[in-house]
Image 1 (cartoon, rainbow, N blue to C red):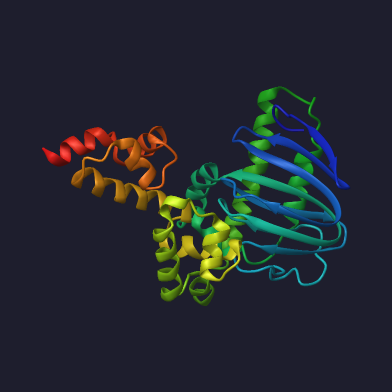
Image 2: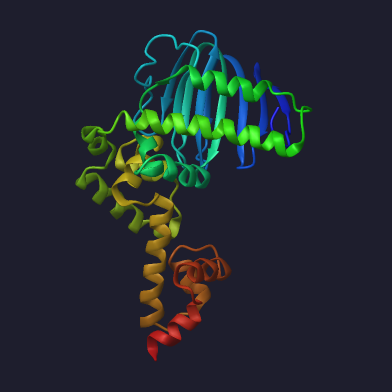
Length: 301
């Protein structure tokens, strides 16, 4: 196998799952064998690329635009067919049939560095691949070779170099596939955003409940959307997640109260939606570079 392999296996609800580290860049490769399953993949700071090795399966995925079969996977997928899921994106998967695949998890900072060398648009070019199947024999060949490589063969440095070479080959091929699809679907981009009325309604709802710490489910319901669709649409519309928007709004409220009132910091923290004064101070310092007390003193100087 590749460098410094840690090999784990588990069986859960009939699934056979094994995960190994690949190369030196924090990439992992997971082998998944399953039949007829549904799972929620949480938002992680990784691009994931699932490559079918064997079996007859039909994948359904929801990354914010509804539960759909990615374009090109309407029928049973063929060996080497791959589906890319963006970083920081929750995904609901439902797979029909027998499924044997290898899944790369690429840290987004590593992807950004490497794709800067492959394409002028960098990692953003991969967005062109997330809605459809990518088909190339090289994906199955490289991922299978990395998976089967004997962990005991050669020195650690050789193993890492072998893994890094395989990872670079897969990412270079993905970048090439992305360059073959230079035109983004503008209609799909517009569809991913909230309408002005829906965005207004959502923001009004969050403002009115800023002290109640509304859940994603509650905010999405106010917008009349599923959680997955709402999360993607809100970020596309504002550049921020709902949580980030709420934190920024709380800091904005806090700055106004700090400048205009003598309210004790413990009470102010609760009034703008923080759990306690310590939590408030940590978030405020991260956003402004100073503590609430120091900010108040400067505002009144």
